[in-house]
Image 1 (tube, rainbow over the protein chains, first blue to last red):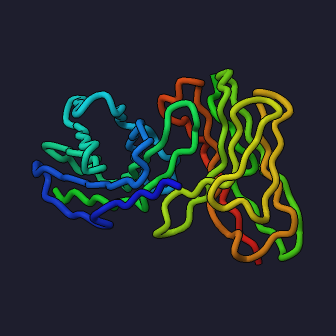
Image 2 (spheres, each protein chain N blue to C red):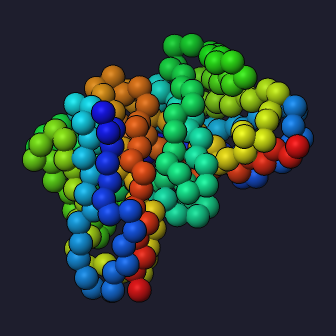
Length: 112
Length: 112
């Protein structure tokens, strides 16, 4: 089955810096890669996703890149703000089969 | 729309007791899933369903039962609670095209 590894487990940056979180997956059949943000005590919320037919997707300060050959994908947050502080999860799965496998999470701390 | 509604929000059980975690969605989503979240382990899939009457096991199904008699509801049953089932449980749903899960607010379960 699918296995997703996520690094780093914690990431501390200064406000305004960029943050990068990386994930690798094992199942070459996976074609859908969402990212979730979870604030303390809250539910995970989808922030961006990418399908395997594109290599990059951007939404304002957030971007995701995908390298299918190497089976890894990354989340990039630019101009970080304190409200970006949260735990971020990557996931991988196959559209239509709904067995999303999640990484173990990255705790991002943005200091003012 | 209420989205995905989970009840109860908090529950304390004694070892050996049984209970049902309720999950309902009003978005007419075909797909529903149950995840458990433990510190340092991300979100792990317990059971999922691709439609009424259809369920399947995820990564960690032991000790849990599910059924899907309607599109809206997907209850999770703990048969005989064990301390290892102390966790936060999230229900999630998505449409057939699978573009991202909508998560419920979670149930924090403690087994003593």
